[in-house]
Length: 269
Image (cartoon, rainbow, N blue to C red; front, top):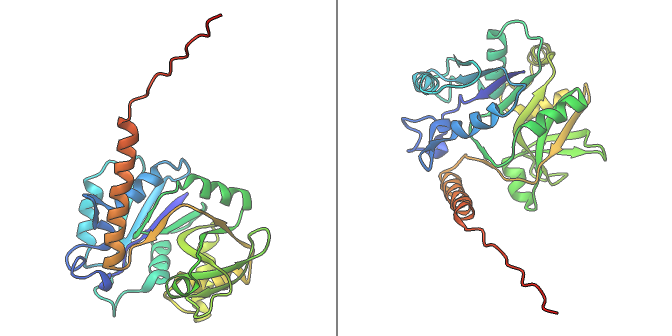
């Protein structure tokens, strides 16, 4: 399974933190966001290669990052030639650029964004794709529909979790299921995306392509109840740092709690 991580954005909402550091390499309590993602990917046996798609401005930092790590699979850094927000190709443009560079593809493609912090393992999601044998998405339930519509693509599903409809950040969401940036595509993804561009469709948000694809083939959506944070603002970045810190403190407390032996007193006759 080929894996592509999109890190080509310039994260203006996170400035000044991202003036000289790409968002995916911002530290969460001393550990780059990308480390959390790569650790999860290393647990997925099917993943045999990872391609990081970045921009020209931060290319060297990602190359230095990869050279400083020892992953169990090869990791490549591809430059999408974006130098600023005006010249960046967008998420779909970056995906197309990577697929074109990768040549002929006869394996499934796992696509994810490099700015997510999440609690769940990726193995179950990959297994879900194997079960469905078609494009699969990952989503979660949101109680606040106003927040959902401003920040996420929203999907409508049938009782089997087949995608019936998809809207990119709708003003009035038709469901409470928001999409996280995790996708597994069949090997035909390259041809599908080329046709999408050939028809003159929106080159940026991935949600537009998902809507296009779900109208032409079966697309399914797994749902997770575990935490997933899209780190897009300084407030969210600070929140994730606090969340990670409290989670680690909880784990450490559990690890350091002594196990008390319970002594059962025998009854006296």
